[in-house]
Amino acid sequence: MRYAICFTPPMADPLSAVAASWLGRNVYSGEPTELPSVAGLSSADIAYHTAVPRRFGFHAMMMSPFRLHPDMTESQLLKALMHFAGAQTPFEADRLEVARIGRCLGLMPQVPSTAMHLLAANVVQEFNAFRAPLSEDEIERSDPDRLTAPQFSNLHRWGAPHVMDEYRFHMLLTGPLAPDALRQVEAPLRDLFEPHLATPLSIGSLALFVEPETGAPLRVHSQHPLGKISTNARTERAKRVAADPSLGPGSIRPLPLIVAALMAQR
Image (cartoon, rainbow, N blue to C red; front, side, top):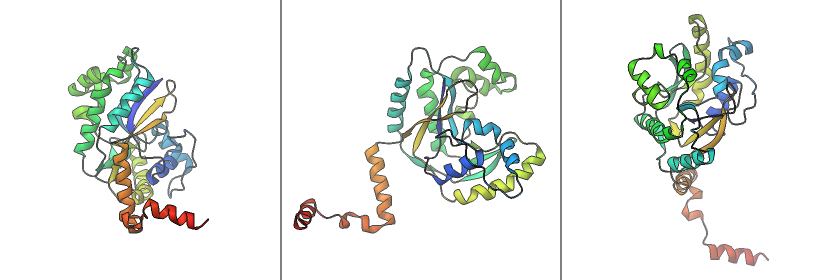
């Protein structure tokens, strides 16, 4: 069993739905999904190009998959993540866009988010004690000979090379693509996702992902809201009232009047 701490939009978010369709798997349920109809791409094309991110699911990694330290338990990890998330402040990152990430395609903010960078760094620092030391095989799978000096240092200190100053928030949508495939996929992918990228990205929770066994698809184990729950509830109510003024305080009848009205109906 391995764990990872990530960001992924809530299950009901339209971005989650379109990403699940594109990748062919729902990261919450783990169930396969029907691939979308995309001009210029067959279902076989989409399935082939999304094979790598399909296993990991739609997410932005904060803390890469790790084995739990022998002195730690899953319940301790869950409790710590709940308290950590509750102490963070929800925020918005600049809206996402389909971008080239090396030889892959994925979603990245149009403008890098300092708040996101700090959150990711805090996650790695806070939960490093829950991580078992890397085995020699795990280090070799990170291909250390190709890492820069800071990335190599991160690997040995934090268990992953692309953290701290090396961290870049992104959500992969394809595996590595050959140049001709990159050109073939990029425009249709923009057409599919851009209708869902018109507003800033709300960062309101962290997700604990689990990998039940080596090579198994990752899925969401639990979702942890950022900030105090009461604060989140007030914020959501304020948004609903702004959208529908009839839900404001003036629309709420005092409790004694409600009771009196109910009694009169008997």
